[in-house]
Amino acid sequence: MTTKQFLLPDLGEGLPDATIVEWYVKVGDTIKLDDNLVSMETAKAVVDVPSPVSGKVLKLAGGPGDIVITGAVLAEFEIDPSMPQRAEGQDTGHHHGPPKGAGAHVSEDKVVASDEGGVITETDAPAPKAEREDSGTVVGAMQSSDAVRAEAASSVGGVKAVPAVRALARKMGVDIARVRATGPDGVVTMQDVKNAAADGSARAGAAAPAPRAAAAPAAAPAQAAAQRTTVSQAGKPMRTQPPGVQATGQPEQLKGVRRNMARVMADAHAKVVPTTLSDDADIHAWAPGNDITGRLVRSIVAAAKAVPALNAWFDGDNLTRTLHPHVDIGIAVDTDDGLFVPALRNADVLDARGVREAVNRLRTQVEDRSIPMSELTGYTISLSNFGMFAGRYATPVIVPPCVAIIAAGKGRHQMTPVMGGFESHKVIPLSVTFDHRACTGGEAARFLKAMLDDLAKPH
Image (tube, rainbow, N blue to C red; front, side, top):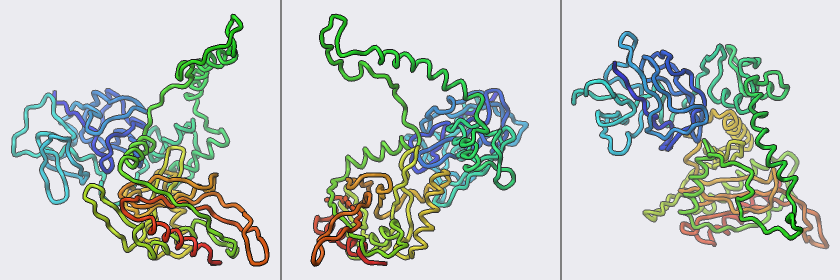
């Protein structure tokens, strides 16, 4: 019997792990080459991982919600020689670095696993000949590059839906098999799942007992809380318990986007020397119809042209600075799953309509988790417009290699001195956080002044 282990490949740009969303097979099933094996959630997307072989499934690494480290065993198969197998040396284009210590054969722009390491390892088969190269790092027909990776709607249980839609259905307690599909060719869309969740027409029957089971242990803390008192049974004041003694919650493993966000924020905190300047932009002169996000983007472009030092990248290890002639703005998008920062490309050549269309497109792609990984990196400066919720000023976090991030707070009216008295003017609070290693306080102040001047214009 010949068995093969399939190691989890790098599904993103150096991502250390991924979370299992849904297995398309179970132990004992037979799977064909390139059929969908599992749906995995990374920090940036939900993707289907196809089977690298044809044969019987012997072992699966965990269940939905479990985290698998990149390079760890994802599945084990018994190879069926009577079924189609990938030809020796055949590569489908998915390329990434092998595990540490593993040898690698480099061919043009691809890295193909060698006999010393890779994604697929033989356990009971004879050792391969030295001249034979193992294309074990390939993962079906997925492409990993700057190109967009489109998610195909797979048919599981008679339901057509992309992995992100299936993940949303599970999260919202919706039985996807009972959702009315409105997409092309009967594909269930994100909106279909949301509509079903809103009207309760497809509530998951299997998921219903779970909340009741979860509620049972919660009753004990609630009962205990009702019995709590500030005095003891002897009538004396109770001593304050150390933190954690009365803890009622349970530790929750961070996954997907939030897991990556925690790593990125910790890395940024360790590497950047942040300083923040704040001021209010007076928009009293604005004519009706001005788009706040569009005007903020335009003001950043104007300031970047006036003071290029903040539209830059900084390499703290080599102490080098890269000033960018173009302006790609990272737009922070808050979601239930965590923070996304897609890039608004070429903001310096977009008009107001182009900016709005691009922002809407990016938000939609973030919400349905279809945004390409290439669109979540490479921006030259960032914007966090948290003012639509609450908050006036902020000290947003700069993510290297960027040098600056702008935060716009909640607009308000304030009394402003004018010739002959006072007027009520609407203002937008702005905060500019910059890496003081890469630019001076004077440069940051001039950048903020350029933004204020542009925002003060009527159009």
